[in-house]
Length: 133
Length: 132
Image (cartoon, rainbow over all chains, first blue to last red; front, top):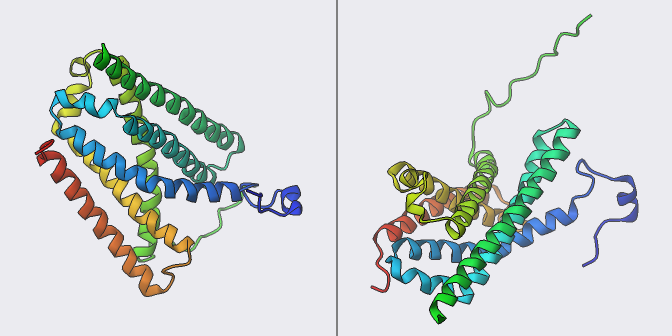
């Protein structure tokens, strides 16, 4: 997708955040993706809360649930990072603090995404192997 | 010579809260709350995957207590609220619902739908039987 900014606006670094269109669009795109993902998340959470303990592996070995949980983790963390960036830009005015906090939020999201994805995948494979073995 | 701070007109103290302004700040606050809760939930999942029996962890009595349940209910209400007001934002981005009546109506509708969804979600979670 082409970047919709004019060359002069990019050269001047227009606006308070210096570059915002990609952020704006990704915020909306991730929001749209999150509509079905959140519906899946809520339904799954309800089912898991009510399932007797011996029926939980069925949920964990399903590949659709694995894909959905990984997608949910990555997309919601990205959406959250974009949102937190805007909040920090609005309320923090000391440049050093602002840049550190924004970078910190993105680091936290990337680390959490990797940790969550590996955990979900690990549990999935554990129960699959238990099923086969 | 120190400069006396210039007088400022009153703003938040005197402005009547309206559905538009209140929902706007609540959307932002619920977003931040969701983000913090999401990080917590995610690392709880990591602990579940790699830790020992979760019922032996230190946080288990808190998480299964009524306090833990209430916090989870508040977080889930934030989720439904942020989703409903978020959809309202997306509709505005598409150009729908800009008239004053539409803004007021959609605002109250979003609040009502989010409360309704939270109630039916928790009613289901605490009552529904798997495969029944």
